[in-house]
Every structure is written in C-alpha cells, then in structure tokens.
Length: 186
Picture 1 (cartoon, one colour):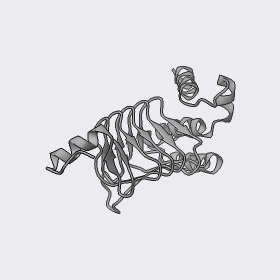
Picture 2 (tube, helix red, strand yellow; picture 1 turned 30 degrees about the vertical axis):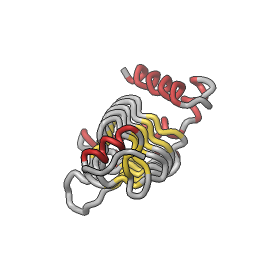
Picture 3 (tube, rainbow, N blue to C red; picture 1 turned 90 degrees about the vertical axis):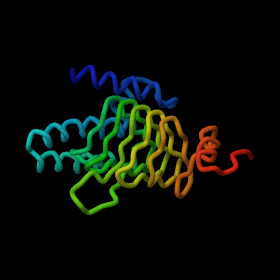
Picture 4 (cartoon, rainbow, N blue to C red; picture 1 turned 60 degrees about the horizontal axis):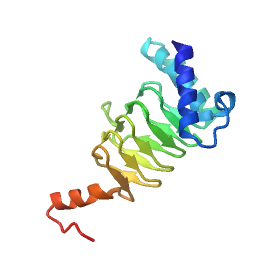
C-alpha cells in the first residue's frame, strides 16, 4: 500500500512536470513530494493522538523542504507541489485528489477561532505560483487560480479566477456577468 502510493506520487510528478527526467530523480530530488510524504506520516501520528510528534515532524519537513503542511490538514491522493518553496497549508485545509499547487501557494485562515477557517480545494484544482486563498472557501472541481491571485470567495467548478481580489475570466466570466445582469460582451 505505501509503495503503491509512493509510486503513484512519482508518476503524478512525471506527468505534471515536463522537466521531470526520471522516476529516480523525482523520488530523490523533489521537495514537494518529500513534503507530502512526510505530511502523511505526521498526519497519521496526529490522528493517532500523537499530536506533538506529528507537529514536530511537520516542522522538520518545513525546515528541509520549505513546505509547511499542518498535520491536521486533510489531503487526498496525488497532490503535486511543484517547486514547493513557500507553500503553506493550514490546519483545517481540505485538498481533494489530483490537485496541483505551485510555489508560494498559501491556504490560510481568516479567523482565530477553533473552526473551519482554511480553504477546501476539490479534485483537479490548480493553484498558480504565489496565490493566496483565505478562509473557509471552496474552490470547485477542476477550477484554476491564477498566479499571484488573492481568493476570498468560493470559486465554481471549472472556473478560472485571477487578480486581487480574484475575479472570473474566460467563458464562465460571461455567465458570471449575465447572472449579475451586467453586460457580458466585450
């Protein structure tokens, strides 16, 4: 089971990174993968009641990889963190399967209360470099967030959003505009 998951993660990296040259290179030299693998260990410890140890392992991974993933976050299969540096995934974040995060992504909280305060990314989401997603928001299945965007509202499935604050672009933008009774032609 563990070997199957590792193999699956390496195959995902090979498929999503055109610079990936071999499975051995990916397995040994990709800090985003190392961060996810270490998260899986920390998460198991956290859920098993060994919270201090889980947190300590997550902090060790942060020092080594530059990726901070809280061990209480809920992460699906085949998450690929490209380049890794500066990625932060908060405590109540939820990430579906087949998600792609680029460097500098922040899935941050917007509350000091003990509640759901970090984003949910559904299956197939892509988040561009240095994007910041804040609060208990949901980014729908196969949606994309542009590099440098700040997202504070839900993103519908299949939608691409860009900017500060993030707004819809593309075909869905016309639908978004018409839903608000705003002229939708350029």
